[in-house]
Image (cartoon, rainbow, N blue to C red; front, side, top):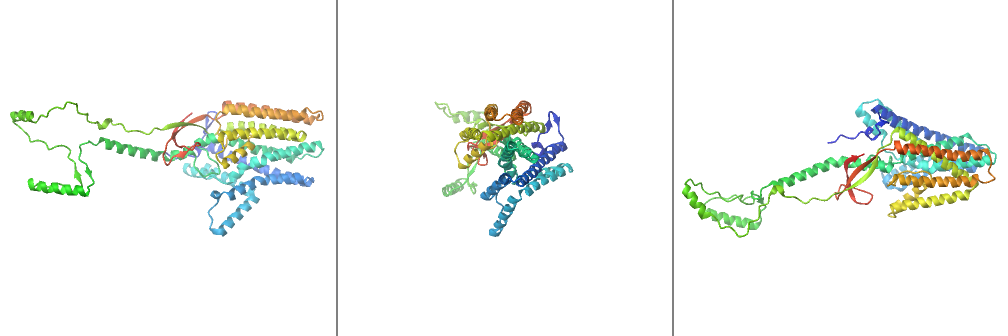
Length: 532
């Protein structure tokens, strides 16, 4: 029986060849990572509230209301998802229990930061507790800290439903205020920075999610077991069952063909046996044992022993049968009988392990500067050439969604809706969620080439205008392409050196009733054989 896999085994165990101890893994991938996420969230929440307050104080009620609505938008979508899916409901006792649960969810929608802070506080507490105990208690603490929660679904929706529109809105307001010679608040800059950091963190976390899901990862709000772990838990039972079946077949084949076997008796067998028994009692007076069934003889009764050589010779000549003209068929050898075996086709799946801390830092820089240049180019173009921006966004969305729908097909409304939502996400960044990359190099070349062309068109559309000729306009134009340059350098470093290695997982396509199902609908089960 294989030992249960530890939580620390799912985390990278080295950074640039330096082996991490268990305590160092907890510090890097639990304490520091959770503290960083919590700090970004608090910073974004505080800056958002401050920006709303300043907008209302300045008399910009429209901007203040839009900023506040964007802060509540992901919580509202999360609330709708929870109450519209019965599989996410808690068990309730009748109508009073359901009403109480609905009220609880309504309060959670209104004061959502309390649940988010509770989630982070719980993770920090159990991560610290894991440092203070031995291996067994440490494993229990890490399992509790890493336990899925529905709050993670809200944290997944927040960057794409709040942070991206919020960053775009505040940059647009700052550029508009500059043209009108209005005051630009520092809290707006902090709000844009924290929003981009939230989007960047979530993008890095789900950059290779579908590839990592093949090996060990799962949605942090999902209670189901990943495919490879689910298979490894039942692999020993399957192997034991197959071995027992094989041994039974071997013992069946090893049984000689002429050994006595008992078969279940019928009424005719009883009559025949009783008549044979009566005949033998009348002639030889020898009883037979036929109580449990008919007994097949192993071989004929051996002849009496003859000691005289002459009698032996005479007996041999008299009992020798005539040879048949055709040769007799050979007796089957039980040891050489080959049974038909089921043909099993193997399928390759390519997965990845989680990135180490250094790779995540470089990827964070890559996506932060790219998102900054993307949002800045969109907001600046919206101030000066709004129709150009709208046209580019519509064309981009049509191209991306057409590709996604072509890859997944129109098999269900749910999948179509998912791909339409991913088309919106891919307008700003890329995550491998509900979409598995087949050729990483080709996709990234096409995707970023399209992004660069769009940024170039949007930036040149307003920069080449004769009306815009000031220091800040030139500064914004320079910052856009300077951020792109830093982003592409970080991307090259990540993809060439720090990207996780691809691992091959072999999958057997079988008809076993307990096997899992792949994306094509065929039954399959994973073999615990992984190659780097």
